[in-house]
Length: 255
Ligand code: SF4
Ligand code: SF4
Image (cartoon, rainbow, N blue to C red; front, side, top):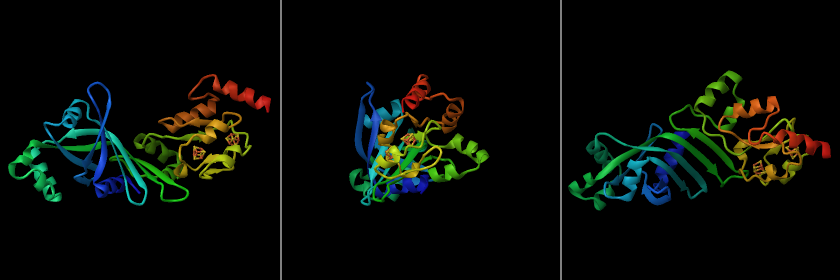
């Protein structure tokens, strides 16, 4: 799986949910056709009279999601930009999507404006597998799965962090005392023993059950940059709450 394959799946689904933000900050959503997906860019169009067009022009922040018949969910969030050379792009879109000729016959097609999402991140979430599988990619960056990120050398990891998607979910810190409670509770059985225990990120649901039940609060929400988490671990600090390290120690003392 990689960013382009995720976009290809959105193109295959074609009619996807497309969210924007209204002028008063409210979420707005509708079904939009994915017209093209190439070179890690997703293309669509809309008519100048629509609220959708106005919202795209006002902020450009978008979120897109679709589900395949095999329970593979793809989610993309990023920024949409109106493309130059409107006529060329609309003609190309109509060539690739002939059914559009029935909706906007003749010259009426030029009320449409072409847009492209080339910046953002895309997530793949396969619920059809057991355990589930997930991966995330930054559009336009090198292609890496969560596992590949984990396996890289330290130098490669630095380069990867510069282009890596936002890290979500949870991370087990060095405060882990190895009690195994989280592994026993995990619905996907994706926590393996070790010092500390380790979450197999590519199979994690991000449900938070381990986080809520660790007796020493050794499980943290992941930050955008995982190196910050590692630095926090080294210095004994916590990335969410400065009092947490102290509380962790108190909990350990109570055990
Ligand atoms: S529940 Fe907490 S302390 Fe126990 S193994 Fe899991 S992370 Fe470590
Ligand atoms: S967040 Fe849920 S699925 Fe992920 S490791 Fe914790 S318990 Fe397992």
